[in-house]
Amino acid sequence: MLVVETVAKDKATGNLLFKLTTNLFIRGIGGFGHKGTIKQNYPAAPKRQPDYVAMEKTEANQAFLYRLNGDLNPLHVDPAMSEMGGF
Image 1 (tube, rainbow, N blue to C red):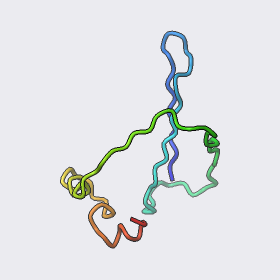
Image 2: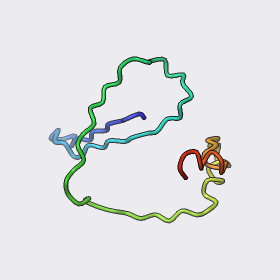
Image 3: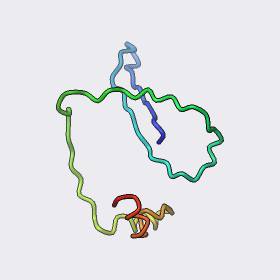
C-alpha cells in the first residue's frame, strides 16, 4: 500500500485549507527497489460524521471501458482475478 499525503494552503495567508490522505493498493509485482522497514504513521480516523458524502452509480460495463482506455489491470476484466481480490 502506498500512502500519499497532499496538503493545500491558502497562498496569501499560508493557512492550512485541507490535508488529503490517499491510500493506493499496489499489486505485488515488485520493481520498487526498496525492501527496508516501512514507516507506518497513519493518522487516526476522525470520530465524527463526514463533512460530505456522495454516491456515484457505476455501469456494469465500466471496467471494460477502462480497458479500452489502456487500463491493463486484469482485476477489471477477468472474473477469476476479481474474485481473488474479493470482488
